Image (cartoon, rainbow over all chains, first blue to last red; front, side):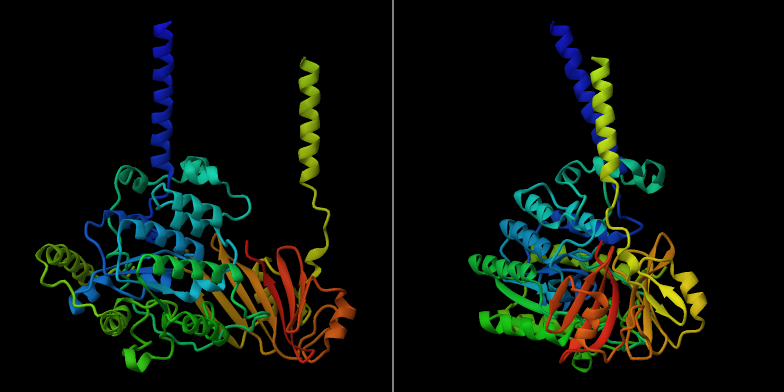
Amino acid sequence: MKKKILCCAALLLATVLLLGFLQLLLMPKYMADKQEGALIGEYYRETTAHDVLFVGDCEVYECFTPPTLWEEYGVTSYIRGSAQQLPWQSYHLLEEMLKRETPKAVVFNVYALKYGTPQNEAYNRMTLDGMRMSREKLSAIRASMTEGESLLSYLLPLLRFHSRWDELSAEDWQYLLHRDTVSHNGYLMQTGILPKTSDREGVPLADYTLPATAMFYLEQMRLLCEENGVALILIKAPTNNWRYYWYDEWDAQIADYADGHGLSYYNFIGLDGEIGLDWSTDTYDGGAHLNVYGAEKLTSYFGEILCRELGLAGHRDDAEISAVWAEKLDAYKQEKEKGNTP
Amino acid sequence: MKKTVCLLLSVLLALSLCACVDPVTDKKTYAAAVEGVRIAVDDPAEPVLSALGAWSSYDESPSCAFEGLDKIYGYGSFEIQTYTKDGKDYIRAVYLIDDGCRTQRDIAIGDTAEAVKEAYGTPTRESEGSLQYAGEGMTLTFLLRDGIVTNIQYLKDVA
């Protein structure tokens, strides 16, 4: 009888180990390709707290560089951004982060407030699979699932990715048990240059009202920040191409919301002269996103606003923090010098 | 016992086959037809673009993280937007932007909301600024100002 129980236990353990191994192997690694999928998980590697946390879509992780904020102002920051990060995902990520640390400010990029419903599983995966298991992750999954997706497939990603067996590459084996760091405190560097050549505007919409669901989560973020004594700052990145267009009607709604709740809202669209942006050199994809040269200019400009508004004095006198950030800044400069243009 | 299992399996199979039948078969009739070319959302872009010939304007934009470009081709009175899937371009949207084009049911910019309803029936959604007709995976939208059509859009729904 005892032998039978031992056999069963061994068989069960072997099955669990095999499934665990298969899951590690078959899950996308987001190392060489689609590095955006690796961003969310990198936050857990942080060893020191931050003055400022950014949340939002690509307009945060492509437009602001934490190493520049450190170098110029001594301000510590982290960008918890991901591709097409939806407002409910930003909220639950923020919930999770504010359990771990209490920054002076949270900066939220408002572009994703145009979305009122779950959009796309591939983007969901890039945000949600990187989160550690928590109540916040479960809530984020429930709020994000598109038709046909299941909670179980997020809890056991093997159920979703089992069919990747015929797409496995050397990368899947190389990163079976670890991942490289692809970002600089959440900033995904792009050093290429592809000038903006079009000023085409977005197509007219049937309804310019920002979705109630999106505004609900903005309100939840505001309340969460208020409860934690953290300033919430709203921003709109300076990028504005026809595909990802920010309409004046949306802007007015955010400005009203910010005004009504005593929040700061900075829309950087059209401030090219003040920021120093040059669309012939400061974008890597024709104006949809900034490259590192544009991101540094915007960070420098916004850093001054942050220091003034929050009274940040910087941490250059703190030896421990300075040592951590010296290393980060070095890695950042090395990648910038090396360049990553394909 | 075997008979019961077989019977149950047969019933399940029959039910699953029934579930695959879409009772709505002709909703995708909301397709634009310009210069004799039918343009429907989600159709491959290449045959359409070839048939239409040279475009007068062109813009493209990358998507965040994923490969492929969204492209927009201008032809004066109308524009076609495409998306990339598995390396191939498909129609995402068609925009009729002036009265040089009419819909398949003979509606053009400048017509009244009443004319739209007469041609297309009761809209799926109606507001002061638009009349919307849901198709299969797409929506046909007539934008209105003071009850007059100002823009017509055949737009792919979010997946």
